[in-house]
Length: 149
Image (tube, rainbow, N blue to C red; front, side, top):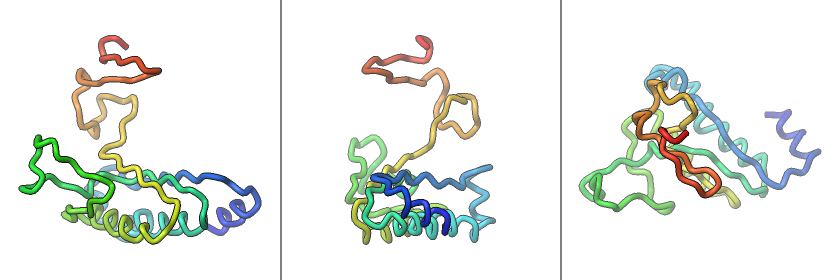
């Protein structure tokens, strides 16, 4: 972190993108490696925002802090907004992510992007949460289904 601080002071960035990740090899590993998860999901994000000291930070976070329930049934069309407090703390991973969501509110110029699952070009990866035949791409305003690609 000291190197990041020194570099930040000498280069004067205008924006910072925070992309910290611990989900490998899988989500369940987080339950048995809690110290590592706390470091990556709580302490490091706060350190990055602190080092940015007033510079805009785009934070790639998780959507795994929300769960559909009786108040918001799946399929009801009533999703979650930026102002909704996390309502899912059913795993250590989600608990740490919900914790940092609350802590980061104390900082100005932080934009949280909550992604439910990262997606890459490996459509047969077991971590993928959709079927490859359902893949849809958007590029340059054009919409493609997988069979078009």
